[in-house]
Length: 628
Image (cartoon, rainbow, N blue to C red; front, side, top):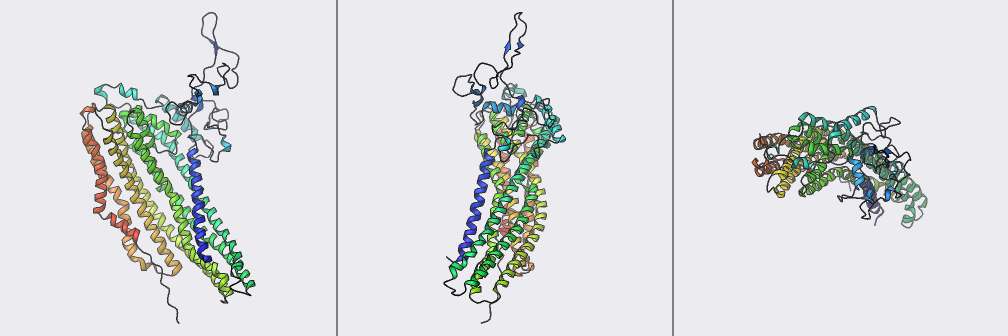
């Protein structure tokens, strides 16, 4: 294999393997990180032994302090207590089989005690401020990503005055909210009160806003932190690739037989090639790093996971009147739990808690898993973009690296001024990539502003449809005789598919447009091809992008009005679930959202617009033939 081919192939393989390994390690680390827990001081504790009095009065506390590790003083360490004799210590029991022991679940579900002792006034109760804030048995100082208080929104490890105040507000509001969905309260409702609201709209909105302040900022901070890690990985890969330039110092060993007597020249130009290789790779990497850094900063406005979570809170707030039928029994207990799951989508927690209301509705598990997979794909987008950036990095730099690798051989063959030529070409190429990236950054900012606005407009009504149908299906399964799980699955699956279609059109159109624009700018600044050569792309590409970006918003605006009218017509004034036309109302959603979206998108030539953006060819400039 020729040296240039082997080295370029090695660069590609090394970069992909290093990045994949790092991403896998980060994923494993993230999956092993326990959820942050509620205030430990509110968790149930073993009773303190008391001594009875001879006069029959109430028992008084035993003045003798309990033994360390044996609170009830029975001689058995608390960690080994087994009250039911099943061989599993009480602190390790997992009655629901979800992988989290009952004691930890009680700790996580406990109310926030706003009066808990806090000796240093740092906003973290003393019971948690012990070096293991998440009570997972691993000291925080030994964890690579140390946990912080659930109320430390920015995750900086310091509770500000505002965060402390929000913790108090959270504790006071949710103090009388059940810690788990209350299915017994729903079952106790009379037939003529099944669809009666359990709290006011104002109360529901207050709880949503309090939880949003606690959860959303922390979720965004965690995603930003993860992105920063990936950017550091990218830097390490670029640095590692550049160091491979030192291998060029071995070129004389392979070329000495082909160019006898040129040993001095080979060593001289091999050293020059090695230095040029290292500098060029790092300069290229710096340009791409700058481009990805801008994308990372702007991604906060277009990150689908953040948009979905934010849209969930906004939807619950804006349309509280649709959810207050089970407000205190289902929605508020779930919203209270959000504080312990800053990386989980709120909709997933709602689906899981829906199963606690309707115990035999396994369909919610299927839908929750599906929603998790969708969210995983969206969270993986930065990784995919990073890998694409890495591949494009190698492809863009390959011609320049090939020239550098061939430098010693060309010099040994007697080509005059080849060293100066190669160095100049390398720097010229880097300059061209820098100018091309600046052009792409300009477009990136504009498209991000458009996509961010459209994303916000689309996600909220789409999530409103999902949450509305989720609430309706819980009511349907809870109160309607002969309720069908298949109908529930089709309804919720259809709404999730609609959300995916919306986000897919936004993401694909932006990615294709930016990708082709970057190639056009590269051709302009590296090969001298005028941008006007691709006037056809901008003439049709810009309208295509705008069409695909704006269509979901217009469609959702109209569809939401139709669906709201159908739901109001079916539910207006009804308090008995048996009087509602459930089949018609539940099937109307997926039929209109999915089928209607696809058919109309095709009719307005949205598919053709995406195809144009994806398939437009930016051909490299054909070199002029040299004279014989």
